[in-house]
Length: 78
Image (cartoon, rainbow, N blue to C red):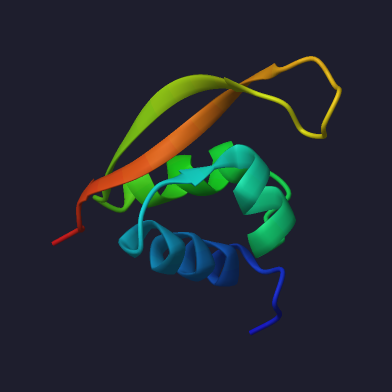
């Protein structure tokens, strides 16, 4: 499996969500997931209950904040 396949991105996202919340910024920078919302959408279709909470967050010090999704795993797929 290549490290950029959709299955690998789903695996990395679920592993991270099991340890706590994950923002789109963290998913992109830390997990190397280019389109976190697409990964979340696929996981939801597979039965994972993932909630989205919106926050304002700067991507870098001194920059204006952006509206950023923060994902929280509520229940595993069964």
